[in-house]
Length: 259
Picture 1 (cartoon, rainbow, N blue to C red):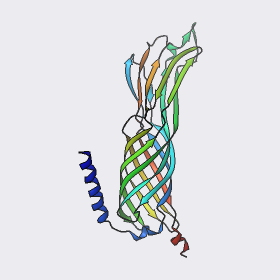
Picture 2: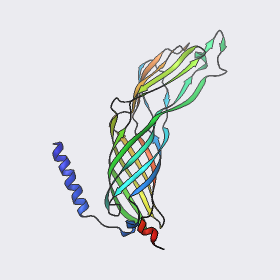
Picture 3: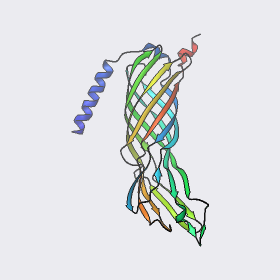
Picture 4: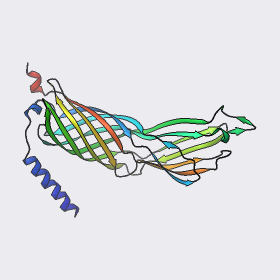
């Protein structure tokens, strides 16, 4: 069955490229382009096992850079690959502890309850995408395009942890580990614009990465609070994210020679 689906995909791709329309405006730029992006990772998820206290998870802002290589960039249908790196998210949550939970000998450790936000990252991962791009003219020297494909990511397994203490007592801690397999897959979909200038071709894309497995899985615990009972549960970070990507393709040698 998988062989049939792969054969069907290849046949459809070959048909699309056979019917390809040529855009002469895009002839004068290099196939390789340098890119930077800003990413917004989906917030983490709690699954309560005991008690009711949980951290409040927030989206995680990150960044990345790399290069793209566009095969048949001057055609309606093209393929895009490259090498991307991105700073992987770890956690971003708000911890709230009421003042009644941190009283000792009739005195407060703090003048008010604890309410703070904490953010952490793991390492930079490396990935290589391969997706199909469809583009159409939208305005003078400008094109609108859509992307659909897959991405393979290299992410060494590791762990991340965090804790909060009040004097000599731990009141909150969490820990998580990444998958043992170093190579992970994801689905990529997006859309964007291309604008051809004499000195450069700039592309702006918005895309979403949907991982085939979670980036981090672990736990959280509330303990040693004077009123609130102990609470614990699991912590999951999918690693899915939205990204705004900007890439620049410089003119080819032939274009540089033109006055």
